Each structure stands twice: as C-alpha cells, then as structure tokens.
Length: 244
Image 1 (cartoon, one colour):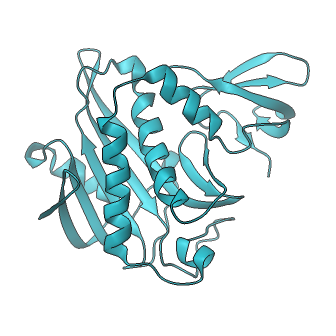
Image 2 (cartoon, one colour):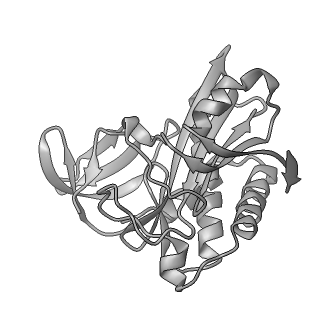
C-alpha cells in the first residue's frame, strides 16, 4: 500500500472488478481508499455493460469516499465531482474534453473514460460512495466492439508514464474534494462542460427520436431537455440517449 495526494492505494495485479473488490473489503477500507489493478477481467459500466481494458495499459480503479453530511437527495454531487476531476486531468493533455451525461468523459466524439458510482445510504444520507474510474491511457487497439473508444496515447502519439497520470488524476480529484461544497456552482460548471451541451441535437427515448437542447440537470441528476415544441422533459439514466 502507498499514498498519493491524500489517497491510500492498494494495488493488485489482477481483479475481476475494482468496485467488486471494494465491496468485499468495505470493513477494512477508510475514506479515500483506492483499489487499483493493472488488469480488470470483469469491469462493469452502467447498466451492466462491460468495460474493456488491456492489462497494464490503462487506469482501472475504485475510490471509496465517505461524504460528510451529504443528504441522499444530493448524491449526484459525487458523480459531478468525479467526472469533472477526470475531465480536469484529460484537459492537461488535450483540448475538446467534455462530460457525456451522466459521467462518461469524451474527447470530441470519442470516449476516453467511464465512471461508475455506487452509493450506500443510511438514515437519508450518503454513508459511502464507490467511484469506479476507467481511463484509457496507453491502449491503442480496442476489440470489444465499443463504437468510439480512444486513449491518451492515441491522441498524443506516444505512451505516458502510468504512475504520473495516476498521480495527476488523484491530485485533480483531491482539489475537487477539498473545494468548499457548492452544489449550484458545481452544477453550472458541470452543465457548461456537457457533451453536445449547446445547440439542437437528436435524442431518443422510449417514444422515438426527437430533437432538443440541453437545459441543465436537476438535484437528482436528471437531464433536463427542451424539445422542438418548447416542452421541458426530465430524464433519468438510460431513459434517453444521444442519436450519434
């Protein structure tokens, strides 16, 4: 175990899932504990989707956070902070980085990072959050059939030191966590960074394809859209998606 930027890191050669390992070790993990692995054999994304990561080429980790006095209804703050911190790191290297609601990180139209947040709620407050982060760093060949992955190596034309990128990512997250809690301000910044956050774009829900403009997110993390008729719509995760 070693430390970086206030986080205590437990590193493994291979795991099925860093979130899964964090769940198994909950009783021995403190706030800001990190489960990091060089190879993840069963990484998960949202909705049970798989996360592809070549061994030793990417950052695959789970950060355990124990928010202080965060009401359950404000849990989306954790997702915003983690996705913004990941974007902060990517922006050190390349321009054009956005957050694809709710918390994937994109460069242009390509996905460079995925984030999976799982919470434990006790007495109407968040007692802990498991923040799974997969960041494509040095992988150059993707075989899973995912439509649009990209890595820092592909964008920059050369490999990066993995420990350096990890330290920079944890420093970015530390800065976000240490800042005074400002949910309205964080919401505004998050919305300003959203993928396709301006202009009219095509979306699809259970009723079909429509065009709409992003108008923000609410305190529950629902995406707020205004369609071509002027109607306001609110969607939870997996209830609406971009038409690419």
